[in-house]
Image (cartoon, rainbow, N blue to C red; front, side, top):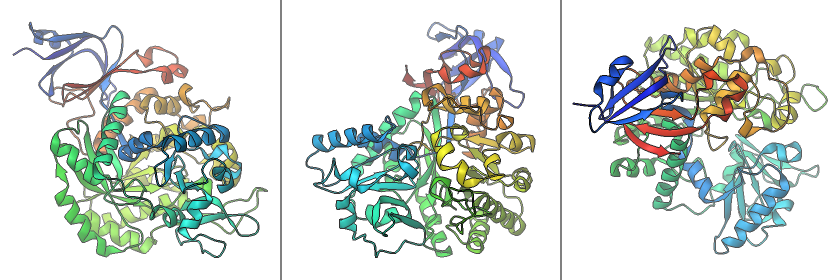
Length: 546
């Protein structure tokens, strides 16, 4: 039988260990049936022949850490992600509020911390455009929220309200709340928000899926499902609905949320939810543990305290959300039950605590092959770099963040100090130490465009689409070569997702493929970020056309 599709005229990047290239691929049904010269023998009268014409064909990108339901819902709400300054944010919020006069709350988000002094916008600003009802607007990284006075009043937040153990209320010199809530303090407000109807979350998922397909993403790991962690609601029912109806065209692994306010008793619930959550192209086989916050609001867990604005040590070394003894005990049980563990760790102490937990699991259970991974890994102590290979822990990189831009320059570097400031996003050191690398975007925190992230990984400078100033390359000795970065976003993430018949182009693999508009290997590295996606296929079916 002839092939359904033959791509010919090369080049083709296979994403194998040798970083091989060829010039033709044949697809029959949902799988690849020929690679290289023999592909031409599969052409028949009904075969669609696609001339690559010098444009690169690659395996489908896989995002190993992303939030498509929440990202899709942001696109349906007051979406601030296209703007970058206070005035534009306020204008967009004012227009959105006027267009939705019947909404009980003004909801949305996506603002940048660098747009405001100290990264903390004020309720007074928000009151100037929304005074008639409460407003709740998380920032891009989801670790803080901007609220107006009505929202503070509705939640009963005053100068006498104590900070929750896992968060902080931003206050002025007199102790009055100013309108920014960090980490767990957001829950003081978002628990009051109206619940999104189930059909709205399905719409958000399909909106997010279309957007991800447009960037060549064919599979992903949703980093938080099975929880009301976000004001957007639990994504899990939306996935099960879309998977059962066939509307889920991507391949998705869901990471079930570890509730840091509970203990080991929740493991039985996780086992039950895993058994109930395998439908179509979706399965929830991972547990997500958020071990710390972020550096910009001083909640990332550090081995040494943060500096103040004058370079002096403070008494704040961040927050470990899960006490290490509980983390170790949880890791042992989850690993024994066959769960993959997906950790959020930004600070060097959080990274070490996650590695220690995995080491405890290996001592108790032996090597499990559960493919545990740690996301974000912003600051890693040099002593912990080789432990990724030794413990078979994948480094899940958000490569886009490894660059100098206002948030890094103004809100991070001064407060980390040396040597920590030079220990950020050490991708090159991880590669040289033999670590397995995977990649993800954390969208809607930042763009889901893999080519923008790969541009940063290679150049250690912002991609053209994300340009925020003319800075020098950031720690260029930690750069990756283009082949390694591409392989991390394809084969590396496929390994994390347990999708072993995807991630590389080879005979028998599923035909999850992406056609780019050029061959980035043929141009200077500083041009990588201009690359765009022309077409995306999942299982031989085209799901996106530019």
